[in-house]
Length: 293
Image (cartoon, rainbow, N blue to C red; front, side, top):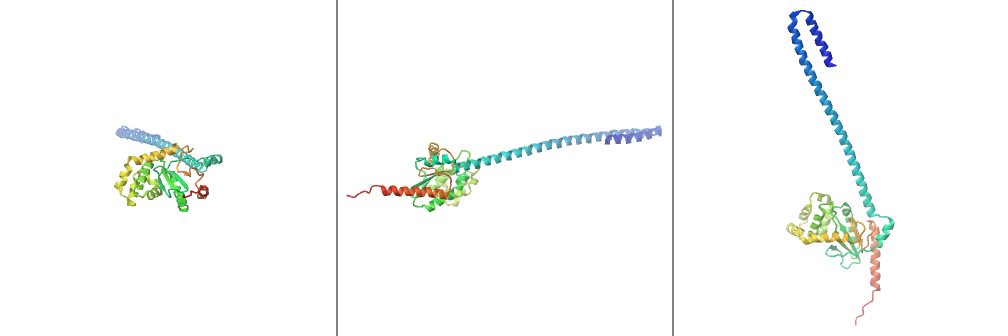
């Protein structure tokens, strides 16, 4: 439209120039040249505007596609979170029938060289398989502490490692903790790693920072960490769970005198432990008395 109006205006000037006689020929030629330049400039601007419109449309399409992708990713993440929560709930509270079956099943697990705390001949042995990058393992630390505080003479804690394959730094953390045990600082390392377990992601040597805080001999820690026996110990503990017959390969995994407790509740655990202590006392009372000749 703009091009058309300008053309009409210029033509009107040309017409006037023509009616005034041949003396204005030069003016006509000049005006015609200016018209051509102006039309070329207008055409160029029009083309640029057209290209700009195409780019804007392309950007809008890209933004729409990105918004759709973000929505899809958010929806997928939400579904994954819901599944993880459901899986954790299922592990903690399996169906009633399975609860009864698992409660009655006794798993014979050798303590071996695994790290232990508490009386050697305690009436109750509490086994915990753990993964140092597992949030549920970290969450269970206070529960285990409560048990040890309530039953210092009756419960022996056995800690075994089961680093999950998708927790890339967990196995190294297990080895560092075992190395710390050789300097009498396993529990301190265990607690500090679980306090900030997210720092392990992408930083497998985070326990070295903890070791310095604890005043450990870092060179010795590294040497014990690299010791082949340390890794063999972790591998053996992993194999124990895999071959135990326990139905769910998940962590944390607890056994109280060989039986898997249902749920992670201090009141429920206390009842189980009290019953096991009572059974041990009854068995001891019924044992034949040795007569001294």
